[in-house]
Amino acid sequence: MIVVATSEGELAGMCDRLRALGVRSVEVVAPSDTRRVVLASVEDGAGAAGLVVSLRAQGAMAVTRPDGGAALEAWHRDTRPLTFGRRLSVCLAWSEHDRRNLPGLIELGPGGFGSGHHPTTSQIIEELADRVVGGERVLDVGCGSGILGLCALRLGAARVVAADIELDAVEAARRNAHLNGMGARLEATLDPLGRIDGPFDIVLANIARAGVVELAPELVSHVAPRGWLVVGGISPSQCSQVVDFLHPLTEGTRRTSGVWSAVVLGRA
Image (cartoon, rainbow, N blue to C red; front, side, top):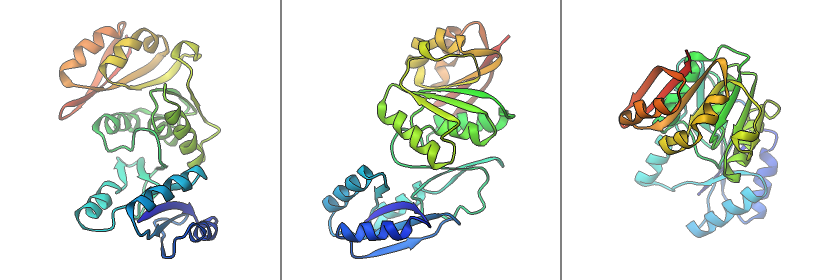
């Protein structure tokens, strides 16, 4: 089985394309007023994987899906929308779950790391939901899918620069920005921090301890006088050490979930 996320306007064309590729059985799910999800039966797993590669090469948001049993149950569980307070929600574009009444919806296509399920991502999203007031300029270091920058924009931030060292991540962030109607407000780049003009009201760095330590001076220098930095992907035992590397910024708040923590810092 393959799943393709499309829109009402592109639905007929997508179904025609699937039939031209040899798919004979399709089912359409309408999880929102604008999103359409096409379920297409394919005879074997290798054929499904090849079809997904072909569709993605044509720009479609296609993934493989288990046909049944525990694997399908896990699929449905893992593709449920996530809600963060009353301001924000995140959902994979190909999810079959209803999302008509979700607040501040962000949809994500394939590619890049970050869907909101990992604690390191959700901790920073929760921090954004608590802190973004509107109009901020945001730098997302190690942007992955672009999820953090997109959440900031949905909450009212003015512009985002999303940086990563992986081309796949930069391309995914661009695609996701356009998917959510934010292409004009998010700039995704492979440029190193030293070539990105600051400062920024908010700097996001969900890049683990080694990445934070390596980039610490540049992360600090990109924080505006009244701005703040949040670092994630670190363990609770690493927090104090990481904060020391980010001097003269001082720790404000800390979130911990199991073995993961995120720390917010600002200028004293």
